[in-house]
Structures are given as structure tokens and as C-alpha cells.
Amino acid sequence: MNVTEIFLKDWRNLAEVNFFPDVATNIFLGQNAQGKTNILEAINFASLLRSRAGKESELIRWGETAALLRIKFLKAGISHELAIEISSERKRRILLDGNPIRPKELIGKLNSVFFSPEDLFMFKSSPMVRRKFLDAQISQAVPIYFLELTKYNRLVELRNALLKKIRDGSAQVDELDIWDEQLAFAAEKVINKRLTSIYKLNFLANFIQEKISAQAENLSVVYDLRGLDSQENISANFLKELRARRFKDIQSGSTSFGPHRDDLKFFVNGRELKLFGSQGQLRTAALALKLSELQFLKSETGEYPLLLLDDVMSELDSARREMLLEFLRREKIQTLITATDRAYFPTETFGKIFLVKAGRLTDGV
Image 1 (cartoon, rainbow, N blue to C red):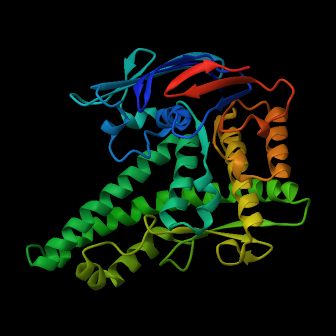
Image 2: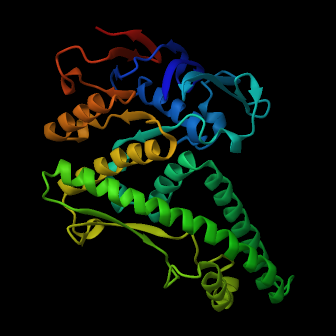
Image 3: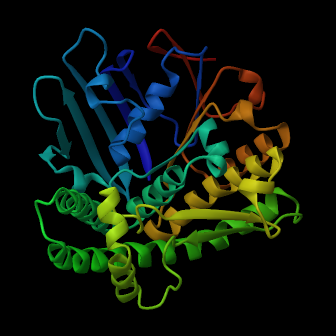
């Protein structure tokens, strides 16, 4: 996959930005709070409709009523144009090649991997952060997974609403029967796809971890099915566990276990990274995971996704920076990198350089 043109208008602090990325590496230099990250986040939003902004309306530049994102890209040798308009006055519009599409149809069209300094601490963050990492990866590779996950989460919401009604005396306990059966069936689909993906991710991440650490470290990823003791007969065991937890769930008004509460555990040389990992091991494992995410998406789709690196060069030591840049050059992965210092990159010609200042983009040297 290759992005050929990016246009942003009134997106966060970006008044109007239009540029043509290099097929390899693109470096965006500038001080903090100038708009570098906004460029990368806009592209990532086009992949997953996910933003760090609290509300989509916050993506619109202050004083304006609408923001526009337009990206031209090649996928499997075919040209496409994706446009997303966010307005404070009407519903969001998504167009692919001039035709309106629904949000669920967008996932998997423009694949990207986003790597920020926060990812370096993913292992010590909440389980939700790790689930989002896994779900984003699978959704882009297998778009139907996004639909199955959405359905599962909706069923959890409906079951939780019913639990509260039962607790308040406005519904009967046996009304849970039909919802529990549907939830168990939906959960099995989500869990099976996660298990399959983690099996591949495990192999790729460990291969890269060994390479980065000069064969000194093995990395393993384990899916922690909280509440399920076995990966066999998932639907039946899930339903059994739901029924065993009914009284507890009614009291709390929420579903106490399932894919929405599961977690990922990471081990380096058999020791859990979250508990025993050094800062160096945490950074190496985070880098290995992101590079394995690239490889995973390529193995599933046939092409590397776009790589977005937001100010991670300052968080990596020189050895890891050199390894990362060499990997990108060798694999010919189109990459957009933000940084505050040109010194993080080789002195020789290295893709395109753009300068970002006060929401405006100019060609660098």
C-alpha cells in the first residue's frame, strides 16, 4: 500500500495542509505543539475512526464548523481516494472513490500502524490499552472481526441494561437466558479470532525480539481469558460461567467477564514483562510488537500498512533507532515520522523532510 497525497483542512490546528509523501520515509520536523502529531493522527483516524480527542467535534479547528481529510492511495495497484468530513452541524460523511460508505465499511481500506511514546509503556497500562492494540490489528487485517466485536460489545451493553432492571425489580431473571446464549455465541467468535491472531503475533514478535536483543531475549504473548479455564468448547463454557455469575452480575449491574475484560500478558525469558521487565526490555518489546504488527498485516493482506511514528525516536537509544531505520529501508515500508531533532536521522539523503510550524507545512532541506 502506498499513500500518494494527503490533504487536510481545518483539522485540529492545521488550517490547510497538502503534500505528496515519499514512497519510503517522510520526516516531519518541528517543536512541540506545532501540528506534527495532528497530521499522523488524522491519517490514523482514516484507518480506524479513532482519535485521542474526546469528541469528534474537537478535531475541527477552533472557530470553524467543519474539518476535511482527503487521502489518495494505492492498494493492490489500484488507486483510491478516501474523504472524511466532520461537521459541527451535520453527521460525519465518509466517501470512498466518491461514494458514501458506512463507518464499518471503512475498516481495512487504509491500513496503518501508529507508534507513539505511550506504546512504550503499554505493558504497564490497563488491560483496555492492550485489548485496543490487539483489536485494531485484527480489525484491519480481517474487517469482519470488527463487525463481530461491535456486535459482541452491543450485546454486553444490552445485557448490562437488563441486569440493572433485574436489580431494580423491573425485569425477571429468566429474561437473561436468551441474551446469555447470544452473548456466548458472539464471544466465541471474538475469542477464536484473537487466539488465531495471537498465535501468529507470538511467532513474529519473538523473531524480532531475538533479532533486536542479539538472541539474548525470547518474547512470548499469552491471551489471558479471565474467567475461562479452557479454550475448548468456548461457547458452552462461556454460557456456563455467565450463569454461575448471574447473582454477582445483577448486584453490580455489569457483565463481569468476557472478551471485554480479557488481557494480554507478555513474558521475556519466561518472566512477566509487566512485573519484572527493565526499561530496556520494555522498549525492545514495544518495538518488537509494532514491527510484528507490520509483518502480521502484510501476511494477512499481502502489503505492508502505512507506518506512523510519533516522536518515538527520542525514546529509543541509538542502537534501537538504527535498527528501526534499517528495517524500514530494507523492507521499503512507507513511513511518516515526527521528531523535534534532525540529529536522530542519518546525515545522508533520507526520504523527504517537511517542516511544521504553527499548523503549516513547508518543504525541509
